[in-house]
Figure (tube, rainbow over the protein chains, first blue to last red):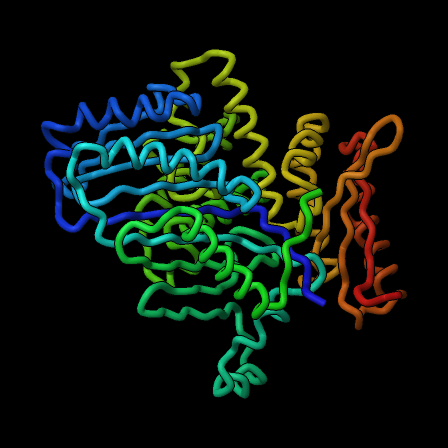
Length: 221
Length: 204
């Protein structure tokens, strides 16, 4: 039977990279794009005070940030990429929050001619097992050659980091939660991915990893 | 009390670093440039008896992810009711996140935050209880926290989940020792809203 875990902290991040820098987005087109995104976010109770324009550093650092603090959402764009972040991520609200991304994304790309070359979706979460210790859950992930060493020297933390051609998974002790496990998984896609397919892929990846870990999310009381 | 809070801040700093590093940052490489500054800031605030507020909207806040997830308006020069409510929620959320560094909180964030608001003395007591609990029960025990409601009011129950090889007698002795060494001297601060108990894992 899977170990029940709480997920007190989780975040989702979506990063889309353009095929080349579009200087207009941080230059003479910025105001038009800003107004477009602002209008697109108004139905989500967006407030002007929750914007920030970063013009320090190199041109690659210049960006415009829009925040919806009540939802833990931010959307930002620069010349090379745009990014959507969500704190307190949960599958139960993913589709609803996705509407914010779609609205902002549409307003950004409309008329600017920018082409998305690739995108990267990342889920990060801190799991807190309810009965087992994290050492018990992560024990199977200790590589065999190291296991004899552990009988002689006590491990303080251990985990795994596996990188694929199109993503990665990181397992570690959480530094944030008592007895917590940190899990981060990411997937890279070519071009722009329709949101439902992207969400389905990430959810299926998470379920697969939960299965490997032998855990299941406990219902939120 | 300061040493307990300083312990908490050490962890908050580690937590802040962990958000930047995503976890185990020293091993995976990350940005730690602000950590000393943030910690020093909090120490100064505590030692001068000030409320803890996040120093700047431009410095990312720990436990909320890589961006300022609670808005940009926490400046002390911008008081209005909405911002104060937001700051209060943030204050209690931060208390909860600190508690989760020591305890497995079984209820939802909302339930626990409401309880911490009602029983404002419990947070400090729970942070202070960690060391005596670990001294008497050892560090292998998981500390579970749950809000229990009766008809009239509620209480917070801390249950030390002990490994199966922890005998009943040993557990009873540990609880007795915890009571004598710490709890009896501090229980008057709980307003009757906090209890400690233990459970032995796999015990049927």
